[in-house]
Image (tube, rainbow, N blue to C red; front, top):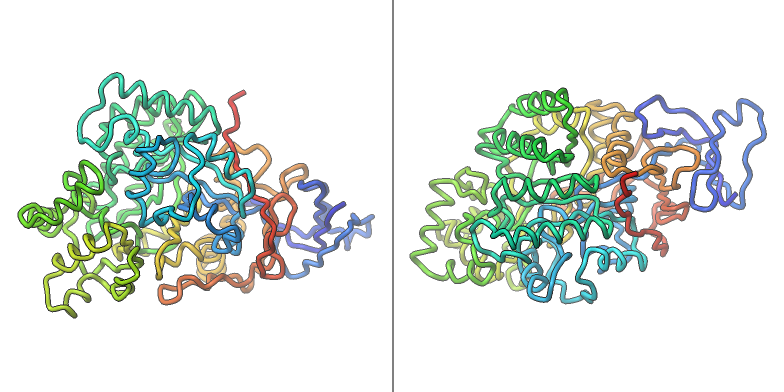
Length: 536
């Protein structure tokens, strides 16, 4: 054998009780599991390397169901932010905006639109245009495995542009074709960002047409739906009804209930989902174990202000009369970009800027920076949007801890970091989501048992992705494995020091190769694209 992990407590991802075993790995797969090998006095497996794992737990690798590492995986071969957490697979292409499928025009536009998520890409060789070509690029070697969702906003950008209007029949045919091609090339489903332009301009009828294509290929639809604030429950109902009619599996992205209007209302969301599940709907969701959200500052603007793309947004911001209309919608009406809730500037903390000359804004709320400058908050926000050319990222402190805890207990819950790796002070979830689940919510607070928690992070997402040989510690399964200390595992990242690595996760293997060893990143690039499993 290549490796034997000896005397380890196996938490196998099923949610069942842990057990002591020797686990042998050979050829990138789990070759043998010998339970209670030492006590039974049986022949123990031997290998070229033996790892004494006394005191450690062994689990399947964690699956990040909502990642924004689309360029980070190419830019940063080490990708320790995720590898150190025990993440062995990330799902990219989230929130309806990513870098395939594109043509030259669309690529330039999407790079501008999500600079705050991924940087401007000036350090990346964009030598792909299709989904298949992007996945081929990942297959040259990346730190962790990656699956991909076709981004509906990018598809609409490609076929329709940035206009707020229904698609023509020819444009809808083109979108159907792009979605089908992406699924044929290996995408696992389709995402939307329905508070982001231009994807938000799609009516439900258009989304349903695309979901029907997704369903034919056995994929799933992953919407960032139309509101997480005012009207959140109606937005969830809309997605459930849409996918029910289309016959498509549904995975709700970062399924939170935020803003003051939703405090304590998570049980209403879960009752809605339970009713749909009882009717036979195929639904899952993911969350991160934190209360603040994270996005770009420009995402807060009303959708009409973003029609036409980034340059049109900047032109509107520079025009005093239009800028005042934007302020009115933000502060007094509640823009659709801010989920229908009037913006509270003391909840909007700048986490990153594209222009280094603007770094003084980072780590401060818009309200605080405005007070320092002696001006109204909108004046400060407008100045920052223009000067940073829409590249600023934010933390939005609008969540509720009781909602977070209630949702993470649900039977269809999975873990997703929603981790944006850009900016001087990114959200700590980018570096801490999975150890935060294990340490804070399982060990310290008992919101989930450790065995349940591991199942949420491994077998449940693997089932959603229809991966036949991942997500469990089973003989014959791919050896994507994590060894952690249940007594010490914890997120090191904080809001003050968000790029701090976790503790208590000494070893991580992908395909039987150590990507983390003794708490340090190796030079192994064992990750590859994980492509859609064809329907049998």
